[in-house]
Amino acid sequence: MAVVSLVEQLRKKALKMGDTNWYHVDRLRIITFYQSQVALIENLLRSRGFKNIVVATVDSSQGSEAEIVIVSFVRSKGSKSNGVGFLSDNRRLNVAMTRGKNLDQTWIMG
Image (cartoon, rainbow, N blue to C red; front, side, top):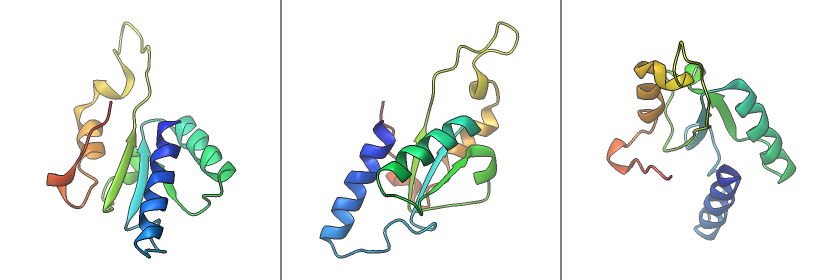
């Protein structure tokens, strides 16, 4: 999974620089739109030895910030009546994209 790969790269780079606190809640946060995706990411991270990284839903992250925020988007078929899940509410997308402390360093990876 791309999120786990990014976390592994962050850890490697941080430890090279002597940063042993790289995963602190103020430094790194992973957010996604669905609780089941939170559970999946947490399980994958734990299986790789990452036990203290914050993984949360977008809704529960409102009001929180971190230096590095990884947003995990998942594909949803949605339904004909409400469209594509999280995209039907612009406020949720806004929250997701504004959790980083330094917005001019926001990167979006496809």
